[in-house]
Amino acid sequence: IENLLISVNYNKVEIKGERRKPEVLSREGKNNYDEQELYWGKFSRSIELPAEIEIDHVSVSEDHGLITIQLPVLNKNRSHPIKIKSI
Image (cartoon, rainbow, N blue to C red; front, side, top):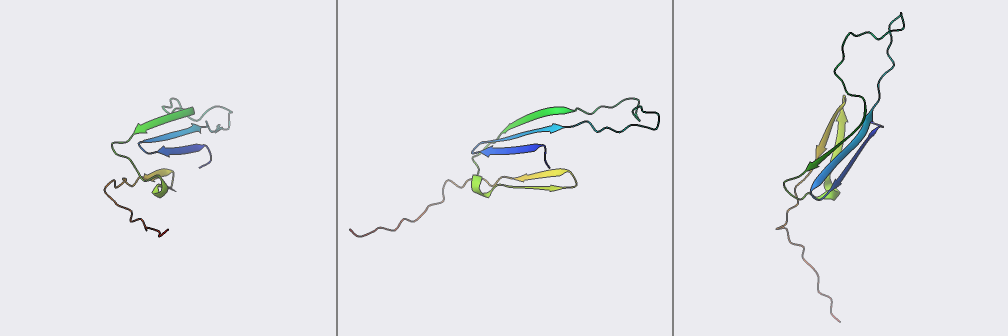
């Protein structure tokens, strides 16, 4: 998806993009519809998250125009063992 940018920090997802109006005309050179309720142009959405996420494990996929964003929650209770070096 070329006109879409998804950025993530620890507690927010931001989606920016542009929906371009297709040039679909009938044989008479007019639009094929009487009324249309779609929005065209640039858009931006910012979503505050209820918990911090693991940025390195975020994944985004697309299937038939549906975007899925997986945001794993950061486990703050996870400990990292640290080796002690002798000096």
